[in-house]
Structure formats: structure tokens, C-alpha cells
Image (cartoon, rainbow, N blue to C red):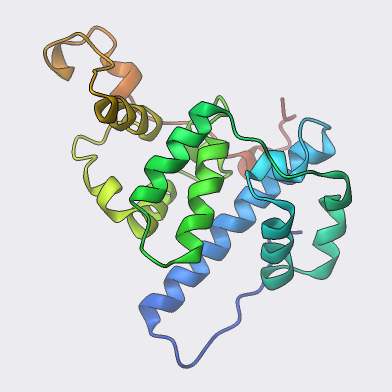
Length: 206
């Protein structure tokens, strides 16, 4: 459904802005596909899967995707999401670094905070193809936050480090990361197969 969505060109937009818009559409399509998998599996409602309210999700679908997509998400059966404290803290961190006055950045702050509560690498939680796409998303919509990850720490680990720093304590007792016994947990490769690739290869989703 979302693999073949169309991007309408606007002749008055600069190439950079148009590329950003297309990439945002790609990310939304990936997130919505992951959400649809959870809806169809009975694991979550559409709002629970995305972190967006019914009104926000309806707006995204109406503006960007085919009308038939709205029915698949069963919005009539969903209620607005109720974030836990951990999600609210992460949402606050992202929102503090979001591009000022950009509704897309604010929307992605909600989506990322909700999807980060899942158990895979964050790029997989979002349904993206790889970590590079996640890094691009964060650099675009949360530039000051993304720029601080100078050591290429795993994004979830980096977010929680920033949250801990804001509260005045450290996640790790080691004097520096290189001396930490759990170094790979923070800095190891974020490898794996994207959900879309698993579907394409005929591997059963767990």
C-alpha cells in the first residue's frame, strides 16, 4: 500500500526542500507500514503504534496517502495514545531540539518517542531500511541533538545518555566509554534486516 505512494512536485520549492519533503514522506510510509503490521496482528491500535492522536494520524493519511489507507488503520476503533513517563521524557528531549515552527519535526518527535519504546534498533522500530536513514532523519529535524552524537553512539543509548545528563547523573560508572565493559552495547554495529526486506524475502514476521 505504502510502497508505491506518489510524491507531487512543487515547482516553487527548492531542490533541497523538495528532497526533504520526499524523504519525510518515505519515513512516514515506513512508519505507517510498521504500524499497519501491528494493527493487523492485533498488537496495537494505529494511535498506539505511532504515538499520534486520531486527529494527527487522520491528517497525515488524508494529506499524504491514498484514501483507502485510512480504513486499513481502523481509526474509529482507536483512542488517543497515553504515553508513559519514559516516552514523555524522550518526547520532551526531541521537541527541545526540533526545528522551531516546523510541524513535521514536532510530529516526528512524537513518532520517534513512541517507536523507541519498542525492542529493536530504532531504525528497525521505525521500519526504515538502515541506520543511515535514521541519522538523516534526526539530522534534518533535530539538528542540534543529532550533532552531539560525535562518537556515533547507538541512537537509543545516546538519547538516554542525554536524558540522564539533564537529570545530573551518568548511565555508566566507567571513567570513559573505551574502558566500559559494556562498550558494544552502546557503540556496536546496528546491523540487521529491515522489516520490508524480511517481507520481500518471505521470512515470517515474529
